[in-house]
Length: 159
Image (cartoon, rainbow, N blue to C red; front, side):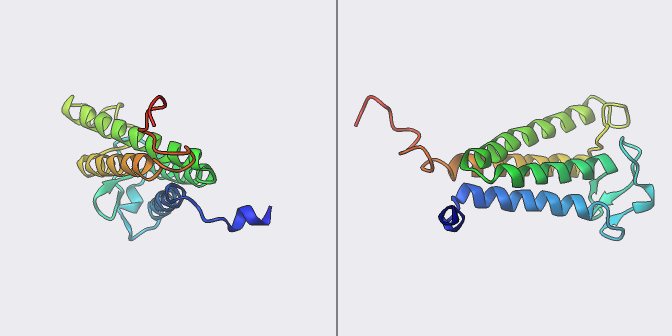
């Protein structure tokens, strides 16, 4: 059992832990006055929240809580190679979807409507795009030789 703990972690697991830690940090910082501007205007959810993390990214209690939960899930999933892949690739796809959702909300004219319940702004959409692409790339590229016995693109019927 002690040997398993000393075995080096796969790169995909290290990346998953780093990304999860980033989400935990963002979740905590969203509750820190000064780092979050307009902290007095922080609401539970919805576009009415006037709080902005680093003065750029619109946040709410729900938004910060989602970052914390996502970070904790990432730490739990990073304990295995398959879990780390799932967190990074699946989470990356989720964040790309969130980017599309944010763009849809804004371009459909619902930026100040009930559909913007997280809340999201243009800076959030851009950040979600970068996070989604980055996580998806890490999840797919760092794990291509780990735990598979070979490259993922080696056909089974050819040497």
